[in-house]
Length: 465
Ligand SMILES: Nc1ncnc2c1ncn2[C@@H]1O[C@H](COP(=O)(O)OP(=O)(O)OP(=O)(O)O)[C@@H](O)[C@H]1O
Ligand SMILES: [Zn+2]
Image 1: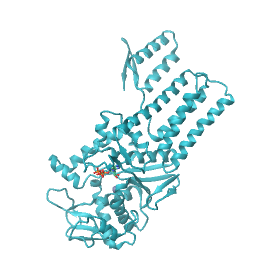
Image 2: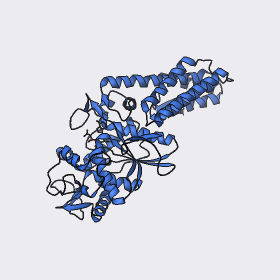
Image 3: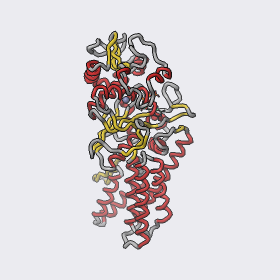
Image 4: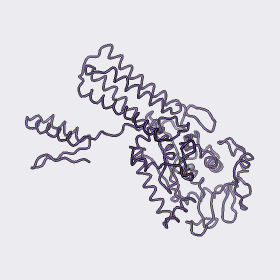
């Protein structure tokens, strides 16, 4: 598989450090608000990368942190008369609700929080001070960028350029304008922790270096986030981690393009955003997942209502294709395969190969989705009630297998009440005729669709689980 590495500005063959395991760190949300569609993009895209690597047989250790202490968190807490922890707990809960709607693989994702790693953060900063890469000044601690030859290597900027380009804050504690803060001294009304430099709290960049190292090791395979994080956040993570360990921090740096609103980056500060939650009131969030995957992850997406409708129509087409195949599996019969049938099997394999080729090429999900559309179209125009069941089943299995990699077509179709009643009637009939095999089959089918039957003296009752 090839992945575009921001560090080298090239598509490179992906080779993890260990043969069968991949470590991945994704910069997660600052939990002071609901996430917006722009924030959802990295979470969806890198969830798919992780699923694809798992599909290829790797075990993936996947970590997405929660930034639960920073200026924005404190501001929100003060506005609401709550503690920072209360705000964080609330919006972590809201994140997890959206994550479920977006079908992110939560069961095996680690979500460490900055405030639960203060001791580790202090240790890390102490290490940098001891090695001469950081200095304290009036209770703050700064990273000294002049100690590094290669500061700026990710964003490909040199320090002079950075100074002239950035609105560098005047700060008399800093030795150099590009030095960045590792530890901030306590200000009244802000949460603080004891440290060797007095009471204070961590800066933003340090938490990612610390938690990545703690859970994934000195060198990780993939570090990912939005391209807006390349500078200064990821640049500073590299500076901190590599100065402390003397080893490369991450072998592959992946960055997604921005989601824009009328060509302007969607951002909380610009107030031009749509939260995932508000969209979920009108649309199933699988549509948003599909919309995000319909563009290549490095290109910008201009978000609009039309785009959501377009994604909905595309997803509906795939769901219809799946439903048609399910219907055919019910009515088609097992048969000896003709040469023509064998050609159809080959064609189905071909769509799968096309999907894999696309995904191997820097996670080209739009081309992968095209392969799914073509598979469905092929089935629609070539299959009939006369097609051998094994051929139909092959197409169905491939469609489901590849959709699972994208995390789509995950919704079970809900049975209507009258469909359930009909099946129960059919089962009663079967039992009357002592056809217990059929009766059990119907009960199992219903169970698979989330309907539980209870045989009671008053007859059969059912409930949804
Ligand atoms: N418009 C966007 N399009 C794509 N990704 C984005 C966008 N805005 C933020 N991200 C990404 O969302 C992730 C979560 O970041 P975070 O919660 O810090 O958002 P943020 O930068 O505070 O958002 P905002 O810019 O709206 O304040 C990061 O990986 C960031 O790069
Ligand atoms: Zn980070």
